Amino acid sequence: MTRNMNPKSKPEMAVPPMLIEVVSEATHMGKSTIIQRTRDHLDDIGVPNVMVRVETRRVAGVLRDGDISIATEDLAQVETTAGGIVGIVRPGLQELNRIAVQGGVVLWDWPGGFGQQRQEILLRSNLDAILQKKGISALTLVMTTNVPERIAEAQRLLEVSAKIAPSFQRILIRNAYVGSFEFAADSAPSRSLVAAEAASTALGFILPKISDVSLATLKPTGLSVRQLIDQDPESLAEQLGKDEFTMAACVTAVAAWYDRTGKELGKILPFREAPKPIDKPTEAAGR
Picture 1 (cartoon, one colour):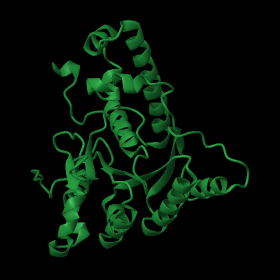
Picture 2 (spheres, rainbow, N blue to C red):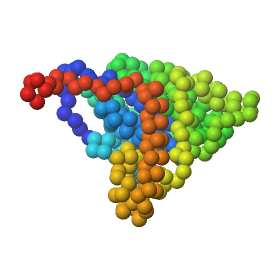
Picture 3 (cartoon, rainbow, N blue to C red):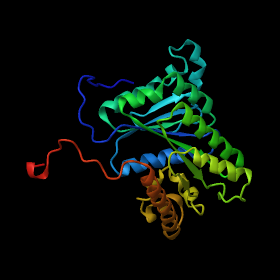
Picture 4 (cartoon, one colour):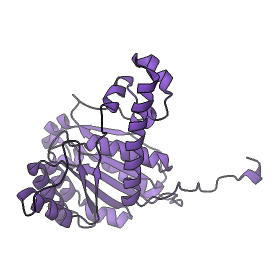
């Protein structure tokens, strides 16, 4: 994918450039949920963003125009690609060059269990040093559930990230969809959780579970959570063959989750208000 860009000009940026990556050492950890919720949050406050998704073609999700899809199947071409594995993800890395000039956020969604390959990419591309040179901040969100093995994996991911990308901010996101994170004192999962939090650079948060089947009930609409909360219950009732009271309750539950997660994201992301456009004509100028 190509973009017209004059490398000699460096206009003032309304939004400082930032990379936000989401990683885990297993699938079904809520990575897609948190990366999409982060995108929705950025959209809500007016921060331009692009998604880079590394995923198998078998489960590739819907992306926007301008987003980058990198198929894991292409890794079979590593031996014949310039730069090896770094060359495979080159389209995503080029987006970092773009935001270094234009500003905005690159959201990078790694596949579950891709920790070793991610480590290789970060090391071979010298990504940490290059991002610092370009003035791009970086944030790594590491996902875990309350399963002890997953917590231990998250701990290792955070500790390795601290070594290979020390300038990256690191935050543990605890996904509560399996259960709570209350463990017996000095138990193995409790120690791993403490160690994982110690390897983080800032306090993370618990990604709450929607308390009932509301989201599953609304899923056949094909709408995102952000779209669902703006829907009219009567319209949803007609579409799904339900009554408007049930639909209103489902939308309310989803909206409460959206609001709570938005507040948590607001605590860890550096964007607080919608950025003001640069050189935009004012009302007084006759817009």
